[in-house]
Length: 592
Image (tube, rainbow, N blue to C red; front, top):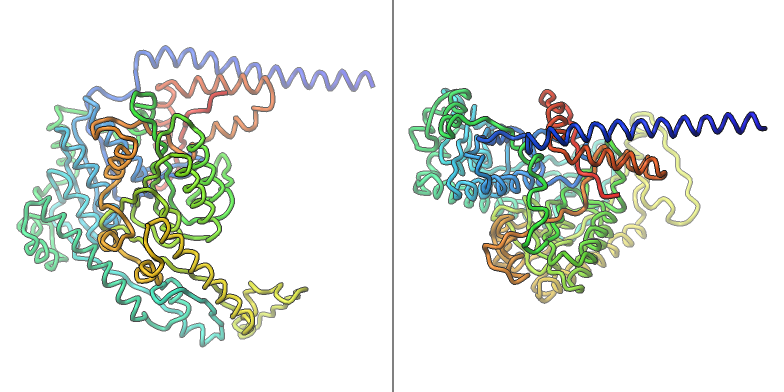
């Protein structure tokens, strides 16, 4: 027994010695990097041009709580905030924008373009370069028009032509394979289920799709005409000549210069006085803590992108979430509400919807924040439909981009039963249920008439509740909501006169509404605190080590290291992987 205890003591001491060595290593490394950091500052050059590469489509915002693996194209909101900081940074002289192959939406172009125009208003420049505008959509080109000069590679395609949408309908196939689609919707315009239930596009869906495509097209044409100093009719005529070559686009004054990428980059560097080209993601990481402490009002910035789901995202050190998990976001609102330093909440939403219960949980947290005296302002990204609108409707003010797809106040629920389809190909399927409706959600058996009636009753109840909550939040009657509901999707430009949103604009328009809500002048800078807080690789180590005193010391050592700009620059350097690869992202550790 004594020998066993000595053996256990030896193991324990060895483990603690190992942790102590780890702590000592990080402390020494922190000391060295601290000295280097004092000499290097944030590691950025004294004269630079930011390289904004939009040749792949970015998400609207990053609501991942694990950023070990991060996209090479920063989220739209990271770019918007980085350009704001760059507009106050004397080292940044301009932006070199690469665009043309991402198929950006008009709403994305409106947000990024507004940020670029705002950046240029500080006296800086932006040069856009395209090896061709490959998509017939208008978003890529509309983004480029926010630069003060557009270059294209010679003989490259200019395909920007208009707005379009297509659909595939599976009902004919289901009939042939004896699959049984049973999906109920409220109401006529709720078209997501039509691909399962219909053989072709319904007239209500054709009406709404034509309307929002026309609205987005009109918004894009108006913006291009304004930014290129052209007549709107001339812009339409130019688009209708596509597909065309870069030379044709130049003759029509849609672009300014022909040349290759190195020539355009040299033009940008020369214009900036031989500046260094710095990826905007690198700049965003190096400057992300700027203004974290300041004299302006502190505002919670809650960014939510993706489908709305119940529960928590449950990330790990190497995981990420492209969903809006209701537990996480309800808690984000509650933490912002409890924080006495937070004067208002700015809620950025980009979502097609999702779970009813998850949406309701987040909406209730929004109401609780308002009841506690915290104004809630919503900034809608490209999409705020169904559940995305549900979680927004109680806000004090809603700002949408002209091309934001919003509304879709309706309900969709049901299933496709494939039992007979499986039998056709020789697959047997057998289910046993104890209880009358134990197999209600079975994908093998269709609903019975009684179950289908139950499902319709649920849809009616949820739809009525949705309309009532929109009416209460938007200060409308239920009858008024009914006329604009029925599952119909509107652009922001069409939603605003119908009372679904308050104002058209971008993120910075919503920031202006926040300033009004807290009673400060437009020139006062707000201090943003992001919720939910972002986590990274080292936060996972925190979870592993935080149970012991030695672990706490190790965490403190790592935290000190990660605050040094030189260490952050090193980690940024090692994440230069080939396009499509993964990146290592280090973030600040919480105080221990």
